[in-house]
Every structure is written in structure tokens, then in C-alpha cells.
Length: 56
Image 1 (tube, rainbow, N blue to C red):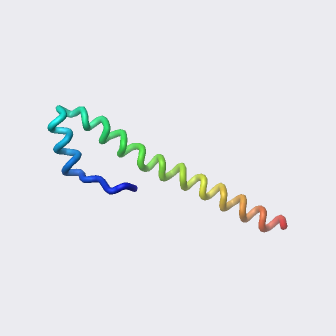
Image 2 (cartoon, helix red, strand yellow):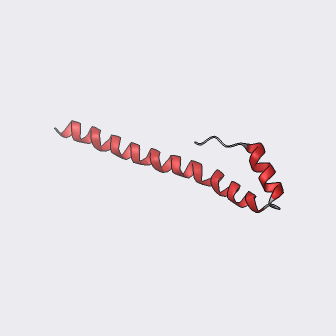
Image 3 (cartoon, helix red, strand yellow):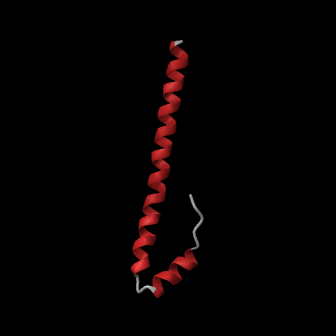
């Protein structure tokens, strides 16, 4: 996950009257989703590789 400055995001939220909080919330939700998608792909590829090795 990318490193983000909580303090900077908080200040930007204050300066933009809360509008930046929408972006902040979006990134907080999207980071884990991307991680889980990548993890699912890795597991699927690993299982396929194991199945192929067993069947050979």
C-alpha cells in the first residue's frame, strides 16, 4: 500500500471545506480492494501451477 501523510490529508480536507475528504475516503477504500484483487489472482495462478504440476 502506498504511504500517505495523514496530517497532509487532514490539512487538505480543512482547506477544501471537506471536499478532499471524499478523495481521502475513496483511496482508503480502494487500496485494500486492489490488494485483495491481486491476492486473488496470485492464488488462482498458484493453484493452476500446482494442478498442472500434479497432472504432468
